[in-house]
Length: 324
Ligand code: 8YV
Image (cartoon, rainbow, N blue to C red; front, side, top):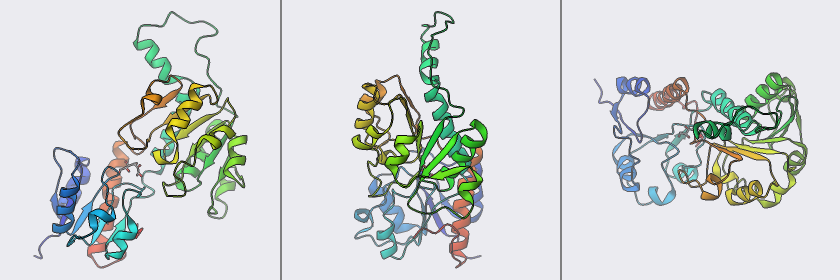
């Protein structure tokens, strides 16, 4: 039997996904689930046939430079791949893949979770009850904002943006606006009752809820800065399940503190896992620890999707989710 390919997982995966890979490959697991140092990542790139990183690993040119890499493929566990310098990998002839589609529904569900929780003050209410502060029902207690029938603006209208549109439109009767520099597939906007805005600014001015679904790129870094946040009406809410870098967190915290924005729901942060005190000090922001894809079913499916990419690559075929 041919020697099995060496595959390194940088973090612990759900057992079913690890077992699936272990049947096919000589698998190195990270049983303790402690993030690898840059040195350890470099050693894995030099010794294995495939590296399977996550959002918590930084695979940049500095890491790849000067390495005698054995790895032929970096099969990332997740859809976003801003933690990998894909140009640097491409230049070294290393294929890069991601795991689209399998996490679309769960990430869209989490965007709606944050939207509802922020609008209806669910995080604040939960803290209130647990603190023993609830003095009983009263007509004016913790009034939030109604969601049904309001307008949602989606910045980015890829798979996840469209899945949010579907939920918002059919589930909550919301009017849906979107802005994306790339045109959606024919009929995709009509199918979820979404209307295009020519600019981000026009969308921000018109929406009661803004939800971010664009990738982190140099162009989208701090897209939601002081000026753009100021375009949103003061009754509006910002939801972010994309990447922390898309939002200037301190500008957001200031807008929330000063009442220039009603609330926010965040699943992602710049420099995770750090969350600025300016945000944790506020009641009108719901903060989650990057849970977008964190359902049992999806996290297993992500692992199987990585496996499908590895299987194709080592069979000499084009991996289905190649991004570089
Ligand atoms: C993943 C995500 O859990 O897929 C993504 O882009 O943000 C998350 O759903 C994470 O990236 C794992 O690497």
